Amino acid sequence: MKHSRGRPGFPYVPELLSFRQAPLVLAALDLLADLPAIGCAKSILRGKHGPLDSERDSWVPLEDKGKLVGAALRTRDRVNPIYVTIGHKVDLLAAIRWVLACGGGYRMPESTRLARRAAAGKLEEREPERD
Figure 1 (cartoon, rainbow, N blue to C red):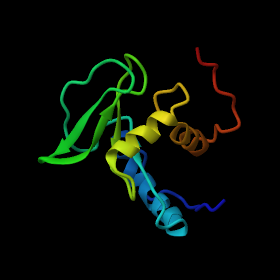
Figure 2: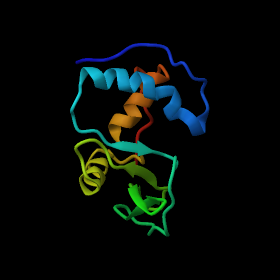
Figure 3: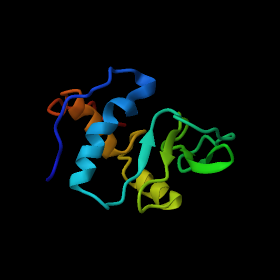
């Protein structure tokens, strides 16, 4: 497995997390260039969306200045949506399908949850059981 190491050059600010992580992610992508990629976040970085049904699999377009940039997606019944953005070599519908397939019963996809745990140094700790 290829990976990239480094120290973030930007302080931790929850709303601006991508500015902290992007340089390291881009360095890793340079090693794995031209692979499909999907964006997924707990909050909106840009754009707006309309009302969203409360059931799992519900989604509505996320638009910025009239341009489709992603989707607000409900990954579990009656939980806050996550925001899926159009990635590299993946269209929006495929990105939504992949995010739903990788959920594992949680709000965020398994890959995102594991990456966040690893970044926090908690990868070795056991997660609580899910219902």
